[in-house]
Length: 411
Image (cartoon, rainbow, N blue to C red):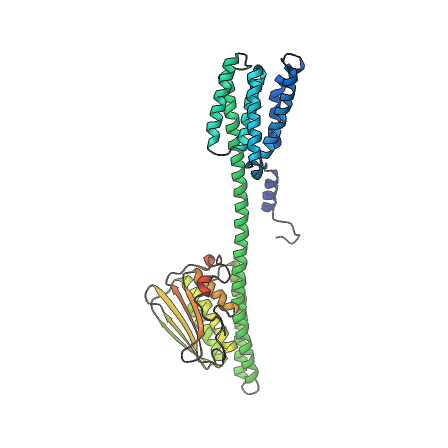
């Protein structure tokens, strides 16, 4: 967003277009159609209607029922209520009574009844009902012989009024649902991006800061005795810091694809500075870029745990890429799990939990816990062509697929 706080020009145009876009129809759009009853009202006023003491209340009752049914038809809960169908049935009975009793302009109440039916009936029975209503209107017009318009025109108008009304309202509801779905998808995309960014930031900064702390301690220890070695450690700190800035920028833009070989080299440098001997054993064909990126995250987190929490003197990285799956094992000879009861499944650090979710979303698994010969072992297994991290962002925190496979996560 620009510094003045205003959205860009394209965004402002889009917002103005959204505001000018007509909204869904409202029941008020169907009220002017009551003017079709002006002919009947005119006959009633001029005294041309027999039994006006029945025609007047009938006209008022028709208008009241029409308005009630139309307004209830625009609210889904009220539209599906039995009361609405009772009101629609009463409107239909009154329409037939007035048309049969008076004919002429009163026959135009059939299209109005069809409009009301179109607002309420949204299922397959609507077509059959409208056909029956149109046929009845034609039959009564022919029987009366005093229709203000040809019988077939009255029948066609009756059918088309309800059909068009129902189609327009169903289309408006569909568009409204699609807009709501689009907004929900946009919110979900934002949530996935936040989850991705939080994971990347945690993994990047956690590893980098651990390396900086270890190398700073090494530089402080070496400074009184070997200034050149201390300066070398300081140079490494500067290099790690610059690389971290680059990686954070890449993580923000979503284009970061780590190389497993590069991560293993960095891990070796960090472990050496911490006084831990790194050993790398790798076999198998080259891996897919996304698989290497995921395993690179595992290497980062495992090394961070070794540097922070273990008293290890040796750390072995084993990559076995034979077959359709690839396995990465990171084992150290440190203190492993402290004495006492074993931790509950799924308990551990945020980093390993996030990695468990990442690998589970790509069809893999992560197991972390004490080794058989002591120390701590992290084992990650993935398909050789594992999917990317963008798909992984959709996995919810604590996904069962990963948590159930990890007897203990973290030290």
